[in-house]
Length: 341
Image (cartoon, rainbow, N blue to C red; front, side, top):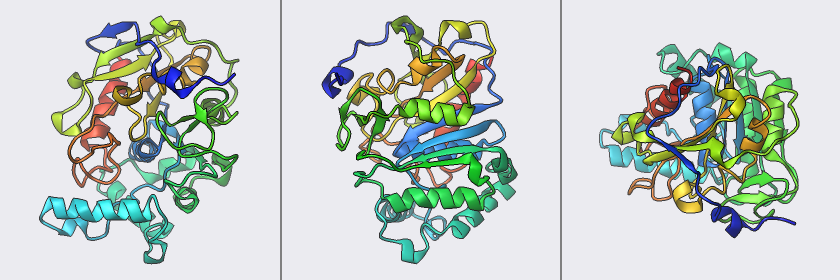
């Protein structure tokens, strides 16, 4: 029987709290990331910006790197006006598919933009992408991010040198704008909080299996192995991170050597809004329990510039949001590095 979304959102709070992330001597040289919606865009940004140490990304219902960065934004001296330009492009060209004729989704344009960032040292060399693995997903009933936008992400990665065999493009079933599970969440076709849908499809498994290869059988993540930690020590105020984040550490990872997977929530999908529906209901922790994998669930908070608590994929924290030194990028990198100590 499917678990109702209300039950997921009302899941018991994590039982362990800490001021800081544990130093676990994790292997952070081969990280992976995934995310839904704004989290999917952030997963793509984070992987490309840090491709020397992040080799794979699972991108659910999101488009190509730099899609929302409008051509004239940096030429506008008044930041609110530049942000408004990016916001309009994000909504009309990188969620809806209304601006294709203007080249918003054009792979060659987006790749040229990425190359400029790489040449400036603002992101890692694009040559690293030849060894990357990318999972992309679009649900048939997703009316929030158009299929053409997700396909444009595939086109970008191919143009950037990712081998076709290293890209898994999935468009299946009646899924809405949500993360898919095998048995928990809303009805598959819906698009509503907590944006975790029962689609009879274990998306956490699909992502991890494609990125890592073979997996041990799924386990059961114990409540005590989730830790709520203080994110403020890792983030500057302009990152607009929430006070608390969550990390899942299976017992086998307490002595070091485990890999790290970062899960970026979608808009309106933070713990403050949906409880542990994503952290515990997505299935990532259950697969991590038996596969020597630490799972980090960083959290942003809503603000006047970001009322839906989305990750920054259009520039509300600043127009350098695509770079390694962007506030949210630096914050998440600092968290991962703490796990590697």
